Image (cartoon, rainbow, N blue to C red; front, side):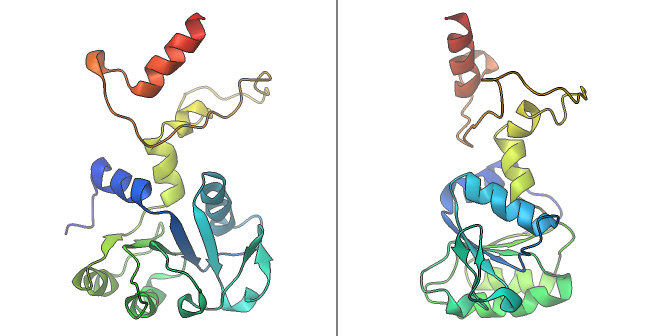
Length: 192
């Protein structure tokens, strides 16, 4: 598989299918990107399992932290690697040893390890490299533009009550006329 680009169907298929995500390398520091991604995905309904040997036994956002993947007492659908590229192969080797194996290995922005990807794919797993599931979820659900990013309008004003962050799903099938289910529902509610 070409890991330089991914089509939206492939990414959407993964994000719609996985339910349990083990995030390896998540930080408890609230200013770290891994913390933001973990919290965001947790708030979107994914079962998030933090994996960080330095934090094992503690809790992160109400979730018990494990030292390694093999310590997790339940199956995981996806392993999200928030470690440097040189550590990705070791994480994938650990994931391959799990039973049942995860369906997906996802390497965060800036993380690319072709050897790790080849091992995962040879073991029947899907692979995504150099992408963030938080960003992809927001992009594919149109949540990013709902929140003001990419709207070409910057403002420090708070949104009026009742018009805050919109929760949308990734299930965005195009209907006749080019609009989506979500767009048509929004148009119907605005006209009432």
